[in-house]
Image 1: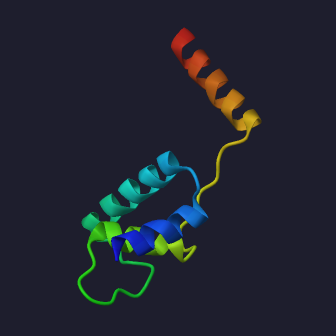
Image 2: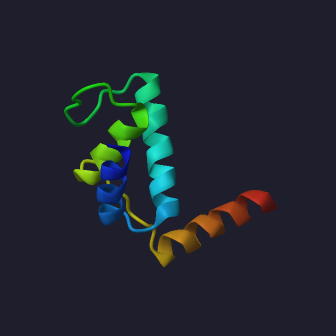
Length: 82
C-alpha cells in the first residue's frame, strides 16, 4: 500500500526532496496529535497517512519566488550587521 500512495504522491509533487520534507513535517504533526485530513481505513502508519493526504491533494506546497528569497536574504544580512 505504501507504494500506491508514494506513486500517487509523486504525481502531485514530482521533486522527491520536497516530497520527503512535506511527509516528514506532516508525520511530526500527526504524532503531535493533529487529525488526519483524509479517511484512514485499516491500520495506516503516520507516513502512509501523510502520503495519502498529499496524493489526494489535501496538502500542497508553494515554492517562494525570487523576490521573496531576495527579501529574506536582505533581512538576514541586516540582522547580522546590527
